[in-house]
Length: 171
Image (cartoon, rainbow, N blue to C red):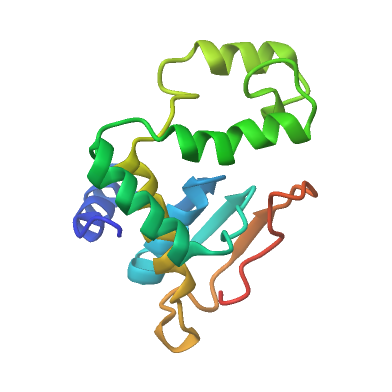
């Protein structure tokens, strides 16, 4: 799941900026990437900060099979309307939001800025959803004996929202 260039990139950045330590920071879906990085390259990092860690979805195998079929029918680059409907649209309904992506913040101005940003709020492609599910799968297979990050500090920023988990037990 993570790029095999990570050790070289980490070394370059550490030397370039004369860093004594390097942290991994992940928020929301980015925590899946961060946990995967720590699983594979934990020895390269001195700590991590995880914020709003998503719950690993139930029925991961079924969802992956379904998304693979949709990718085959509609193509890898087609936006996944089904995934959007099952996730972000559901979040808006749960929060009874009148604004698209209103579940993100109680501050309406923040939501408007998010919606106006072309790098935010887009619908993931079928390939993007499959990559995300592969990340969940990779993180789920983390075994304590394989953990190169053990014994290092991890800070969790916890949201009591139903959609977020408090911690990841394997680390």
